[in-house]
Length: 88
Image (tube, rainbow, N blue to C red):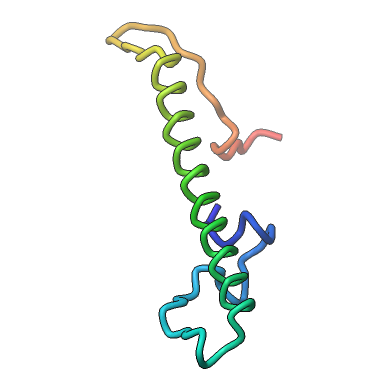
């Protein structure tokens, strides 16, 4: 899921990661700039938490997975879901 989707549930039209460097408190309402910076900081923190959770999940899956070894003569189950069958 993209970083902007976690807040909305769908791709946002206006990104929360907008650059706030062009705002100067003298030209704009200082409360609005502070609010925008707080929202951006929380968005960045949430993005960091998502990235950490993905890494943690990857390590967990890696730890629990068992590599399979297949050699000639081994019997296997075959999945025919994607194979067309001509017999009705």
